[in-house]
Image (cartoon, rainbow over all chains, first blue to last red; front, side, top):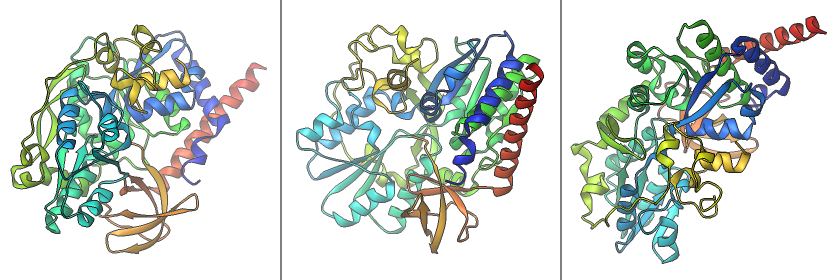
Length: 360
Length: 80
């Protein structure tokens, strides 16, 4: 398929890997992939295995399901238990354990919880079920947030009043800033390609100016990721960090102006809680007051149970790159994809799920 | 969750386009695009086109990758 096949060529991938070895020599380099889709793509294509030992790839907090705190899930579960309610969610959220239940368990008990591919599907459900409340679970970064903003915009324009969003959308740049101010030593970042498609490469400039660190925006095919890692190896070995864009076929300096304008019209920046990291100022998106009738958190008054965190789970340290999955005593023992304890094992893009499925 | 897939536009009607991905057809919302024509490749995430793929930049990247492969081949033949 065009724009996929040409970036999956084995010879080219091996050639770039050889160039990385030549540039990095024996220097040890810690490179963090921020995006969960990168975590899974790196594992699926076996990129770690073809890189030299001195290049240490660590995963960051870019799996949206993984960083969504238990309290949000408990809130979603409380909403699901209301009468005449249909909860719509992307598939990854369904199995994540909340404090005492999960959406999957609630569905088994008879609550109406549906997996959708797009917010447009949820809107269609709202049109076809006017006697029910349709609540979409708004989880995701800047790639997904415009599609959620668009659903609120369409609902507002078409006067669809039985649709609302429980919003836990987050933005990436403040999390990068938090990581750079934290205790994880990071020599370079593989920056998220599709988040950057929306926000544009210039969005990272203020952070880069404050904390100059090697950066490369990467696509998701093997050659895309290897080329970005090669670029990082060049920057790190020469001690000359840059804000580089390796994914120029879709990422521009200013990003998608229309999507950004809609994000800004529907949402405003707010402080947000990240599992494992805690509160990060201005890292969340909240629905503006003007659209509060589409905000499920304001529209429905439900009692949320007291939050309980899973005992022994070290997802928090994994999400900040401080430890690898194998360092968690639960990994592969009590915590597996069929019986997950922490969110990093549940989500298909979770670091633990990727390591369990494809090996470390 | 940030997965997005290149798809080719076959038909456009207002803010909706019919796209083809590996023989499968589906409708996607193209309201976030500045311009889109039949035959264009777009990047689709969760039912929305988030960007038109820049053909020229895509070709440049392939050229760069080919050049790296060539350098690696030359390095190997120097060593052998």
